[in-house]
Length: 170
Figure: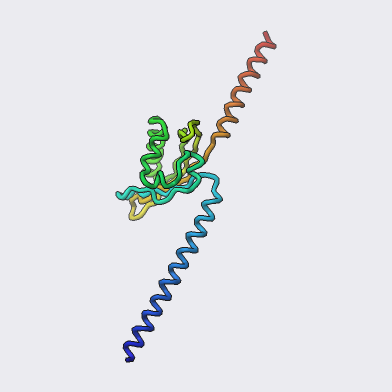
């Protein structure tokens, strides 16, 4: 009888601890999601330790690419097709070099949006290591299309101003 009561107490304590741990995990998930929703870009975590898979990609990927997060979670290689082969190669080289040197990478490229127009993107990230081996690639991808358009307008204005100055001096 005493052993049975001890077993019931142990089971009740175990259930309480499991319930508490579940509530803590849910709270951490809610906090993480609130944080990610406020980041003005796509955040991602990609596992690279042999079980290559996209662990997380934020909803902002829909605005950048026209595809929902689930599209890339099913197969992250789908992201590769949205970039030109040259851009994909530069992105890959930047990540490989940064991972090798344990530094952050930064690369700009164009993303083909589902609706047609290309978007300029700037990706920044860094590998996470465990036992001296890369395990995750964590990063953010910002849509810099309007910045690139403003840079192009400024470049065109400078060309026009230089031409006007040359015409005045002739």
